Image (cartoon, rainbow, N blue to C red):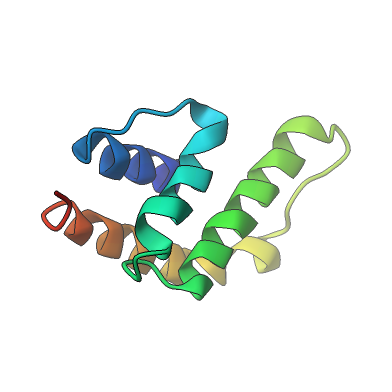
Length: 91
């Protein structure tokens, strides 16, 4: 999650937008998904990662198993690469 979060923050900063932690993902959707630069599946992945991070951080009795997170590694890596490529496309 934090790799995606920090890349989202970089995209927003590159565009001259600054947001607190809770607003980064929302603003990412507004600025990149609504313009077709990120698709719905990519934004669903971002939301899923955010929800997973929230569960781990705030639910004392919760832990993700390897089989829950391992399938997300490749998708997350591809998303980060795509987001990195968008740095040159923002105004």
